[in-house]
Length: 152
Image (cartoon, rainbow, N blue to C red; front, side, top):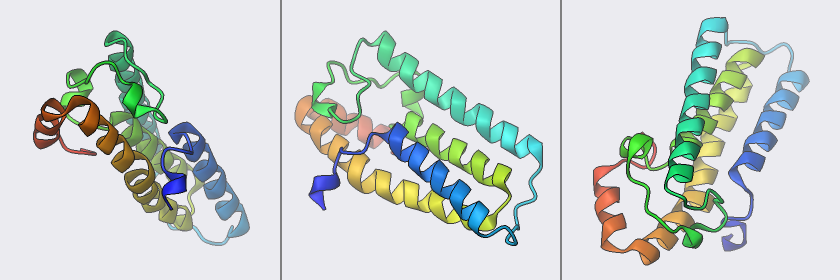
């Protein structure tokens, strides 16, 4: 199982799950159950996009690596801006965008892929990142983890 750690870049996982959601909705057209309308879709899309942009912008401002496959290459521990609220705002943004997509598709079965995203990210992306950042930044990273939640 460790072979999967840090192997699938989160944007690729996002696209894979979005595609699976679409296929699932197409394969089960009689299943509906999500009648949210465009306002929740727009709100989730806007929120998810904003979290992604703020997360990337904070990394760029700090002049550190945005590549999630190489957390040990981080030159700076980013704890300010959106990173005061969440240690993983970009992943949270992806989750909100997948939620928006599920609502847009209107098929309740697509919602099962949201916890799949969270579970996969926690196990194969976030935990390995946390181990690497802990080794790299030590006490400063542990203090940050005590102050800031993993997701929200």
